[in-house]
Length: 281
Image 1 (cartoon, rainbow, N blue to C red):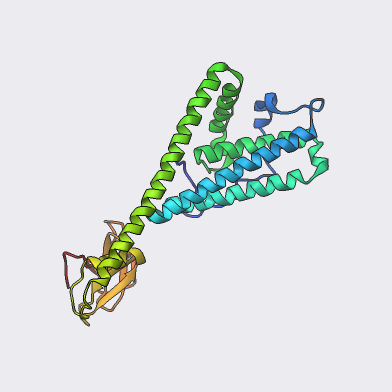
Image 2: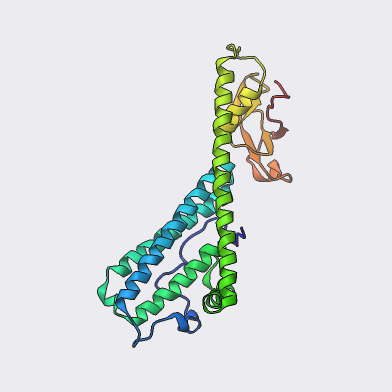
């Protein structure tokens, strides 16, 4: 799946304004927008209801992506799924308010604004592109043109069916992957509990083994041997590189070029290696 740029490190909804849809879509979507003579409030309401069902489906998909990202330990994907769920919720609230306003349902201009808003929503969620509106203008125009072609020509309809089949296959694979990850997690937990039941109680000074490593993995911690107290300590986080100042303070990072002298409080910082089953205290 193509994940586009999402304003790091903090994502916000400020540029996803529902009250100011992209104006250039008005002309682009003219063939799909209802004119004053053709406007049908009942059809408008039915269109809103259908859109709300699509939003609910996309919200459920984002929930699944959130669970997978959590199990995989991917902070970026987890944040993106959270952001998408917020966006789905915002659009669903917009549709709910729209369907409850009879005067709006009778307004052809409101229908046109609704179509523009939903085109933007479909583009963003299909492409996972949450950049500011100015940056997506060209891509959005191409997206709408592609969808119009798919709905108005035999060749386009065949292309749409092929794309829909591919998307369904990808979604099914995603669901299977999620189920497999859960099954692996359950098997690992059951195996650990079985080993724990069959392992005699160990002394405090015994070595760091696979049981300890598994505990660290499920807690999201890292264990070290304190050079002064000669006791084992655990710190939150699982990073590639660790530093300690011989005063009980530890700092983890994934940056191989990290300099403790430029980024940490003054101290006698030294590189330290976490305990592993093959590296005992």
